[in-house]
Length: 284
Image (tube, rainbow, N blue to C red; front, side, top):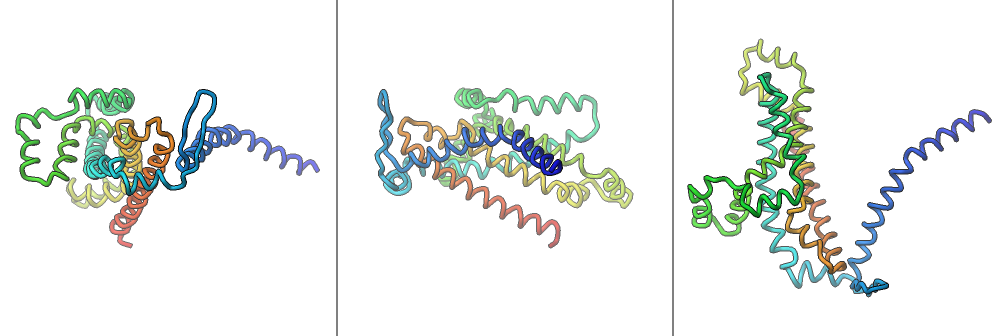
């Protein structure tokens, strides 16, 4: 009897510990999700003392996907192209900086702080203000007339996203703070004895990077890839997010769910890509 009471008590304690999370999830995640799905099938009209819902089925989805493509495709396709260019830039830059910051040199801690500070200061509104003022662009863009050559020699469908990335290139690098931190933590998990053995065998730094460092960081590359995808797709300056934040709640909810499905497809594509890269590097 005493054993049963102790077991019940442990269950009660566990339930009490997890209760705040369950309450928060149901209140702030599950309910808004279900409510937005409900509104996406209705025409929502907000009056002074009540909210009126008129069921219209898949009308909002048909308008967004078929009838009025400007709601989604005009912004989404250039943004996806831009993201495809930004993701590798962010990953390569953060990996490069993390490897440099792992070296022993005077002031290393200060440089680590400097590279992480933008993550703390750059809220969505601040970044948007920097982009609006043109502070994130590279000065060589104007001096070398790169935008002119892009429009002259590249298809317009790709010239515009590339120009957009270059015009906010400095801010793109600002997004790399968390990724640098993750790569730095991952690099420090690699055993020093492996590098010592490699050095004794006569391996040069280039071979050491490709044979030891890069394969050892594959799980962290995947983690950063997922983080970067989610961060880019949910950042407040994202053009799709700005279209979701309208007073037409039914249409905005439908657009948000369509965008959610697109993000999930992008994440699944990332998972498949990671599995192929992991198999290739591990030789399975």
